[in-house]
Amino acid sequence: MVATFSWVESNANDTDTSVPTNLNLGSTNTADLAPSTYPITAGTYSYSKWVRGMWTGAFTRIENLQFWMSASGTGYVTGEKLNYSGTTGTYNGTDTFAVPTTNLDAAGGTLKAIIVADPAAANIGVGGSLTGSITTSAVGSNASDFIVVQATIGATASAGAVQQKTFTLQYDEV
Amino acid sequence: MTTVGKELEAMYVVSTLAVTNHGNYHLVTGTIAEVSAELTRRNVRTRNTTYIKSDGTEAIYSK
Image (cartoon, rainbow over the protein chains, first blue to last red):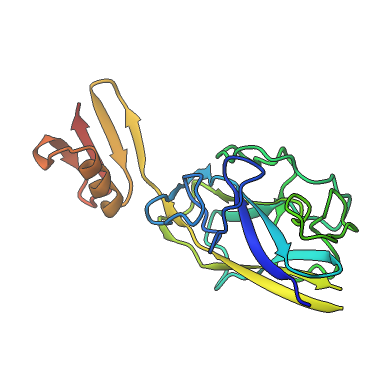
């Protein structure tokens, strides 16, 4: 049997089940926002995005979650930077959900520059541990820890669209 | 064991628009398109816009 994967985005509560089709960042706290309608003003931060992987269907175990920015076109524009909550180092456990804001590092000072290559080891946890695994599709127990992503746009950034990014979440299914 | 990869794309737009209140007027700065859109959003008629820089990146209008 094969597990069925979906992304889940939280905008108001950690129990939200909104399924995003993109991870567009902007100046509003909404899934699938229109970037041109909600641009990020240079010198500020985007609203943070809080997403998780969720699995349903029949499976034995989901584990070894690895998340990275797998494509970014020609790269960052001047003043642009993306931070995220993953790490292969000391894992502080799952970030407790907080309604997204435009404050710097809405995850509580734990965001780091997003990596651009497969980390080759788990950098997103399950149940607060990088070695955790999902063993049931029961609601409430079938999702990863939160993945928090936030854009930092410096005052030197020029107006206009940035390069489209692609993020990849890789996992092992047993 | 199967290794699976799932992708999600992201896009965003940078705005240089800034609106500052100077008491009896606002200073709106940004690209031509941004300033134009902001004045439209604020329902400011062009004739109320007292100054636009020659490069079109700055506008001042009365309240």
